[in-house]
Length: 508
Image (cartoon, rainbow, N blue to C red; front, side, top):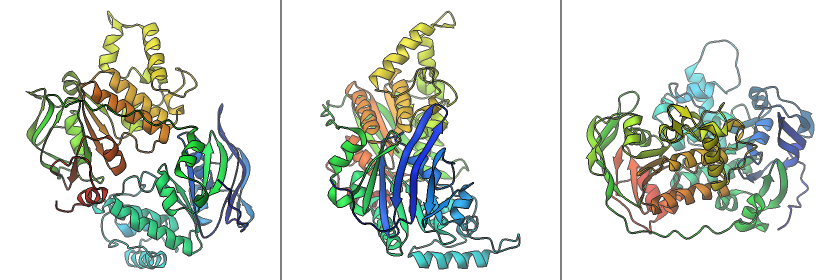
């Protein structure tokens, strides 16, 4: 492995950057150079400091120590707006578009102000088309409501927003997390065009093969510090993984058990979204004990509605759900829990955790677990602390103490809390959505192993995911959900290109 030797002056530089949150040192003495005409990948496990560093660069956080240099001159940003005006734009992992507004209206929020307070749709649309043509990006019709755009088009719009006003530095946080293989290729082609225009691209990802495919250099962070910066051509995927998390043990081979009886059955289920628009259409499938069914698809094709119906958050407009041959009569979380359905929600922070509460308390946010540790209406706190400590050890949780607020944990450790609590309920059926999204190698491996262990114990597992790699790694059988309809089952080996086409809506 070798450090890049190109001595070109950096467009953007961080010098001895530090950031402290109370007792937590999130960044410690970070120094990095980002050059014009370069795609610079940033790797690190959850909690390594990547997001904190990018938020400092993008004006969302003020550094505690150190400095930023732009074109060799020290700069400070009081806000993200100030950073954008200086030419630094960031595309977050979770899109920040306003669904109710059109493409042009969303862009108007970031285009340079032209005076006056009146929105000029035609002028904004023309400016958007000029910007799109300049960066070689296909733009959807300016009058199209954002809610109607497919995921790939939404991401292109986010990138245009970040480049509005002549942005020279573009930060991309996990940009391929919700894209099909067919959408990843044009994204990478666009990044290469931006590189040719002498822009600096900072590319945050957990997927090592993407680093090899598109980046020029890679910097690896660990525990708030930079381990090193390397020419991508000089470092292998296994070497990058070891630098990120230490020696990476090969995951234990999964012992696949013969599937048992049908546990979960959906028969001709249809449902609507929050506006009442049909989003699931006549969906039927079954999952047996010990089986993992992967449901692949691009966001917005009915995944949310399928999850909500299966865990009792909403009632299907037609059809039935049965557990162990018994049809669910009620659709609410209590009825689902009583029927043996556990779930790992799509958004751990909004739906899986109570962020101000402690790690210990979050391990107990389950009626089944509270009942297990209660006697005559009183919670046996000594028993709950032993239970929480056992789960923390079993799932290799990294945390300050059981009494620390769960919001202080990294994303990967937060997800381990959600997974540990759910599996401690010993469900017959487990429904999970994007269980490893945004997780580093170690955290993703821990979650994957936990789901496989649940199947080995006889649980029927459904993994609803936008991540093709995740689906292929976990599943015994795969179905694709596109435009509210479910494909016939696909069994391994599965061609990723074929699966990507089905996710994009191609007819089988």
